[in-house]
Length: 302
Ligand SMILES: C[S@@+](CC[C@H](N)C(=O)[O-])C[C@H]1O[C@@H](n2cnc3c(N)ncnc32)[C@H](O)[C@@H]1O
Image (cartoon, rainbow, N blue to C red; front, side, top):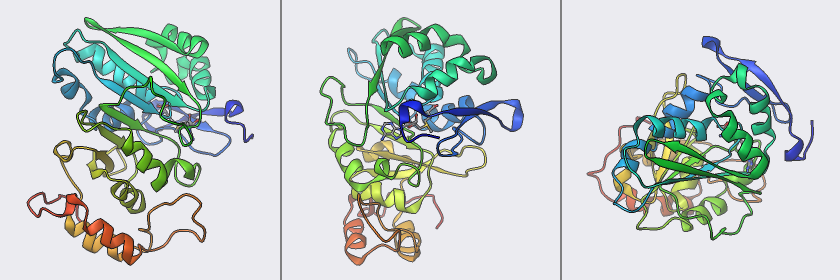
């Protein structure tokens, strides 16, 4: 066990259904623990961002931009490439930016490509990514330009060469393991990096009330994302309310958030642990445009 992310070590974990995933020995977290890496990545991130449908519908002259936050063992990124290879019908190239502070999980995935299986068709691309930080993969008549953006995402200044995304696969560990990746300050900065003329959908495995509250207070519109096996729902967030198909409702706000003992937003450096939402934060949420219109009612039950 080490605190240095570059030296993080992993082990293979067999999951139900005969597939393998990997577990960090530093923090005990298993990547895509329920249905396995390829299936969860496809359902949660590729399906949740409606990547293919939206990529094919972009205006002429512009290809989709994907931010893969937490490259890890590349299951999410490869699921995107796999889906694009099967159904992307345009000639505009795709830009995939994989953010991570460590390539240790990618190295492990390459060393265990046979057991993990999903990396196998892409081993040369993964090797190029690991060795040189970038690669390109053909998808139909276009190419995916895939680049690693190294460093701590939580402290990175806006790296100007990275264009604003149409989709963000948000997949760091968890608020317990890396709280810096779940703060109001980080999500506010992330929201500020999106462009109003580039509608973006972010996907994450969580269904935590506190994380949803944090995203809302950061200025995102937030909704229910696809189920992933054992989890009946996940979370999507967007800068464009039209992209959120199942927005969290006023009912969710008034009942679930108000009643929860754990709905306070996650603020950097907060001490004293989690707790109920304050009156001030609750008032701010009530003023969020998502809850102003009763016509956009949600499907989620509290
Ligand atoms: C659960 S894994 C991601 C799994 C990955 N998306 C996949 O498909 O295999 C979490 C990843 O987030 C990265 N990470 C955690 N905190 C980070 C931070 N502050 N900045 C950048 N990357 C971070 C870790 O290094 C790790 O590779």
